Image (cartoon, rainbow, N blue to C red; front, side, top):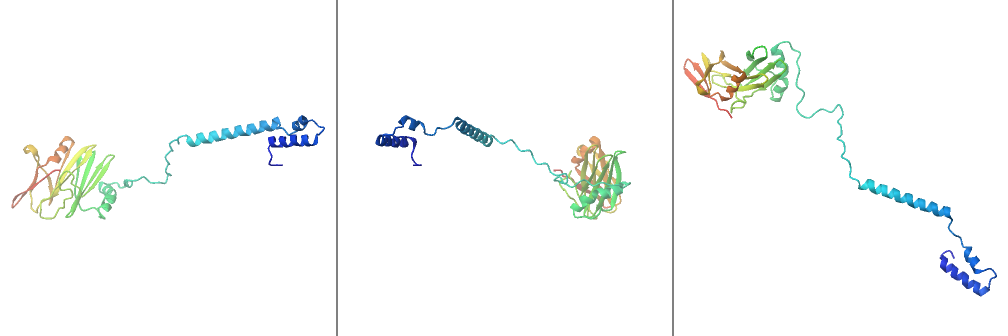
Length: 251
């Protein structure tokens, strides 16, 4: 009987009543079937409503576009990518500071120490000092400003010969600039032994005499004059055997 629905059960009751002629009215028997109680119906309706609300909320959460995620903040101990921190120096002399500042640049070039010092000058008096170091294989320029410095190992970025060497007995050249605060530049090199004068030739027939110390020469310029160093045409060394010329090409 548990598998019979209400209509089938009612039919069976009617048939039994006809067969037995029960004294109880058929309407009373049919009316005595269990009816759903209002409280149970209300609880069922509330459950269905809550389920619909929960399903709707879940759908909205899943279908809503994701907000852009905040980038992860690196921990304080994480180091920034790129070059290592610039070296510092507690030295009280210009040569001591250059030794400290040049350590990293020399290591990258496969060197362990600065070459011998050839010149120490002030292209901009009181504001910018230049120390030139050199040997047979190349030169290193150390610029010392009031707040900034620069170390250039084996660089000649104002000429097409980017990394010139300075073998003895030959005329050589390296030229570079500091920047714009303040603006300054140099041209530097080696001359044959016995040279008595070194001329630096600029466009338009302008000739300036470089400082000469043994086999090494140096000419510096500051301000607008330093811009002309990117246009030097040639270096001329006056020697006992006659002048020797080195044409300078710029990229």
